[in-house]
Image (cartoon, rainbow, N blue to C red; front, side):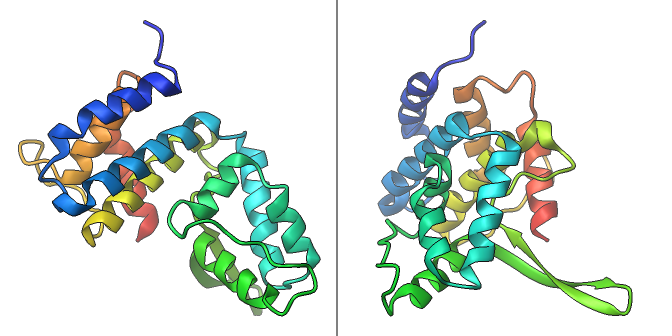
Length: 208
């Protein structure tokens, strides 16, 4: 059986809205559905792991030296990367290359893509490392699009409810995020090949 295209998946997500009532506050339901549809669109549009990771890492690096390079990278970013930058913070207004607003713009971009920073020992020194939002993990390249999808749906749920994402202890009492992911996986047509529970487990583990 052929997997649905992006428009078919979006129509299925729209049809799920009724069954999602009560999972999030009523006033946040439309917002949640819109964010999940955006996540599905990104899933279908995602470039290769190498391209996606390279773009985000170059942008993150450029934010520490807010000059014209950052503006160039943002202006030339792929559609998927632009959606990552704008899905939760709104449209980015790119300042002029020589404007005083460039430092604030760089800080705003950085706040949207950095989810963690830490020091890693390297010999006698420590090296500062950063984790960029939704960067596909190098150890699991075949699941790059899946990891991103789960990350974005989880972020949408957390934004709509104010609750952190967690797993249930029993299948008889699934968490709201598990219900959402189950429906999203069905909408995309990947439930037969991928476990939403395993994907969520990795998401929760990587977040901690």
